Amino acid sequence: MKNNLRQSTFTRSTKETQIEVGLKLDGAGNSEITTGIGFLDHMLTTFSRHSLFDLKVICKGDLEVDGHHTVEDLGICLGKVFNQCVGEGKGIKRYGSVFIPMDEALVHVALDICGRGYLASDLKLPQARVGELESYLMVEFFRAFAFNAGITLHIRQLAGDNTHHILEASFKAWAHALKQAVTVDLGIDGTLSTKGGLDL
Image (cartoon, rainbow, N blue to C red; front, side, top):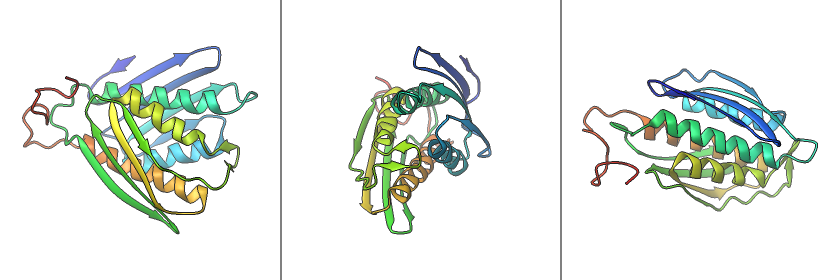
């Protein structure tokens, strides 16, 4: 683990997955993504580009079983590295809220970097698979991220009947909301909390 100036790395190795993640919040949206699942690579590349976070993900998982371990463990690792990057959260805006359309799909993401992991999602994914990815696993990904990042994450689907479009709108909205929330506001003295910290 390394942590310096809103950037960090995290590695995790189990009998099911071996994962290395690097994240830089003040980046340019550059990414290097290898998960073994094409659609997941696409979503994480999209996330990096729209958040302007630099992201490196190298994952080898037991895809001969299915994608569950890979997707959930990536959510865990990305959550942990995000938490390390934010640190005490001094000066950040803390909240983010974005609506993103993609053709017929419309998704709203609202989140709070508060130190309390929680996911509320009402995603309805009509197609069971997108490429090699089982669609339901994306909710597991967001849950794992939220609990390990220590954020409250709400994902609301207002419209959509194409699973690819719904998920891509979700990832873009998540990216933009996180970018809002980690933006530093020079008018904030310490953390934006009456408790004196974001994890109290």
